[in-house]
Length: 289
Ligand SMILES: [Zn+2]
Ligand SMILES: [Zn+2]
Image (cartoon, rainbow, N blue to C red; front, side):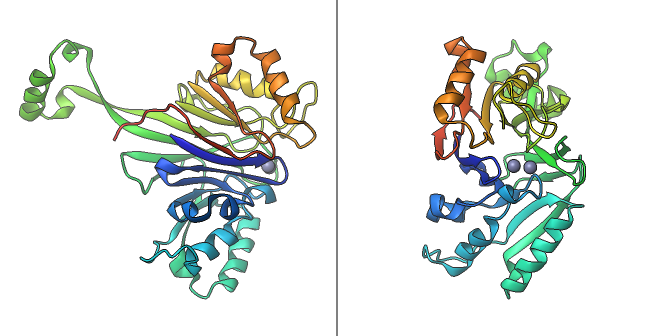
């Protein structure tokens, strides 16, 4: 799964999950870093209305409209999901609507409340669910859980060979042999204290904020050790840490991680979006379809 991301607390945060055509948050720099790749974005999920998480939208929309990268066929409207009750987003979208005469054709706005669920445009039985996270008390802040629906063969049928299973499916339908499961593929915590979301247990990738290195603490952000504890508790396969404060150098952050997770094999499951460095990597995360 190829991920391109940039993150500095208070300045800019965004993640482009290229195989899913999915942008998580939209801080500054999407256009300059992604250039024509940004035109592939189809769904945008915004976690909350702090300025480091959404102000890159304007340039992204300009790029889609102007065709500076010679996008020949017209692009479909960008779908933007955002916390429904946030007044900042209402005002920001009203401002953008005044900037773009064709606003209604450029975007589809989807206000989200906790537990709301939507299908991703990429299909493949992928859905996004909004979850409320504990960040600031005066505004709705969301994280998103991306799930994939899969069939799992019941134990009674697991010893059969592929041909026998296919014959049974043809005769009786898939439901007779398998259960429909929902696998958390990717979980994005948004900003806030450690994620408490039982349904995210076992996620293939947890993207979690870690603003401070211990012993610094905060009521509205997580520390590195809190983020790692959440990763262990939720039994995610991999962890991608972001939102580090600019007060720390990359060397301080990697040294702190080595202290907290001394085992190199375990540490290889933890990835860092270091402040000021573009993260542009393919993580070994296998999806179906
Ligand atoms: Zn932030
Ligand atoms: Zn914030």
